[in-house]
Image 1 (cartoon, rainbow, N blue to C red):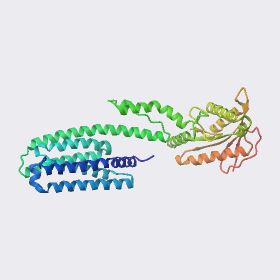
Image 2 (image 1 turned 135 degrees about the vertical axis):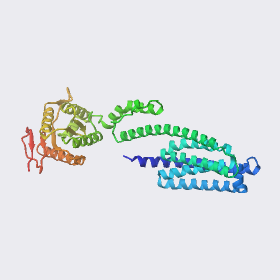
Image 3 (image 1 turned 90 degrees about the horizontal axis):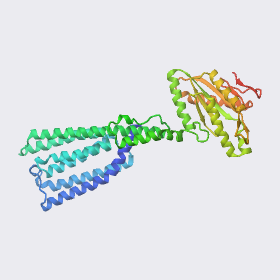
Length: 422
């Protein structure tokens, strides 16, 4: 599965790419408008800015606009090249936005209107949390508070009257509002991340997790998406994990169940058994009766295997006429008993009745072992296949139990079980 960090970096990169155009447009428009309005005299510098920068205001406006535009272009080129944007890059971008906002407030607003910077920052804070997450948003909150205090300090140092109790009250109200915004956005992010995780697991064929609708005290659109997924989960699992012809697990579904049962057996220190099953001479069924009859036989074989298996056993169709049964918590004796029951069921079964009445036998390779860890998966599969091939080579219609140094022995055609020895 893709790591959460990689997914977040990729998402941030996509956001920064499409936001670059808006940043460039806003920077150019704001810069040109501010310089133009200043030139015709419609906008005046604030007294504090006039005392600090004076006639250099137009030059500084142009420089800041140009630097910001160049930064946006460089950012776009870099992100487009590497296709990811980590937390540092996202945070620096947000701080650059904040710097431009407070620079314009410093130039054009008097000390009594510095709260406009907080208002603009509050909107930016919400967007930052939505697109980049908690850390850049909290850092932006701290930077906003520092910038607001700095502006008021500069104003006081340059002769403006500043009411610090009012400044601190305004900043406190802003802080409380910002924290409420971040809390709401945090809840939304957590729930969206939960949905993304569920969908990623579903993409891999794991439908065990459902969305916790009961945890949403105030249901909203995210809750509706979660409910929709929960309604579709069983159907999706059936489509993705089940072989439509036999009704058994398909290879993907079997692999998922196989790994899960191995992990469980490793924790509990129990045995698992694996049965590899192949339908004998199934090609003759297709050649003699056609593929439609062959498909009906496969469907009935699936029913037979599921009926013969126990409740906890996993039955899967892993190939055209190949099946596997995973038997958790089962010793070699138990697996042998299950395999013999299956072979006997095939011998007694007539498929596709009343016509054309197809008879069919099966060969079964059996392995059972304790599970030290999940790495035993391929070894178990290989041993089951080796036992199956031994059953096929020794005459079909029988069960072979795997043992070390397996060598197929010639058996009676009606033979029941062979343990090929060392």
